[in-house]
Length: 320
Image (cartoon, rainbow, N blue to C red; front, side, top):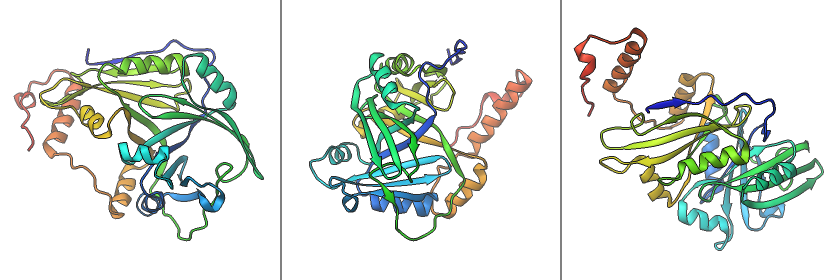
């Protein structure tokens, strides 16, 4: 099969309207330390805070923002909390990929009617800036999707949070918005979750890759990409495939101890400038071998021109 692109039938109405990604929440071992790292290295502004000083006794959370990207870093203040258990099992990881909707109660009710398992019932959060309505549904592993309605709220983030009072300016690196969030699931579960997103949230399948399209001599995976009606939410879903060694998906599932969000891709208008700034801030990037880059460039030229008669293109040198 290789790569297959599926064109969904044109829909007159979106069966589950979603405006975009509202936030992504990580459960982490030390939210205060992580927030400073994200600000100083990745250029996020620390927007808001929630903790004992604001009346929340069991956790501390920092909200970070750059462009349209909003991240919450949450740490447990009690050893017996769900947050502490999550971090003990998985390490730092994504707990909540929150979706921005116009009517959270209606969206929650519709999702449950279509087969979603509730994570928590709709609740109204109110302060002097207005009201946020929020509800949650479960997805792969321990990951959830909060459904967030904020049309009647004018505060910095949502009730329960206060503006961050710390000093220090952040220097953005050009991050604009979340492009996609990748979920890794166990062998045989990919199609189950593709169907879940189609049935529950009205997503359609954009593209699929089999183990021949994404593989090396030793490792392979299978992947399908689903997206919501307006295309603002894209979720690639990966499962392992057989190879001579464990696939990267197997390694993730083993290390993370179950399915979860493997990575988050963030868009930038100038990737060279963004990468340069991140390197200047101390971020280390994977090095792509020059032989691999030359082979890919040659393959692209061959695709444009038709069959290539240069024997060297059929026998690229191995790197490493």
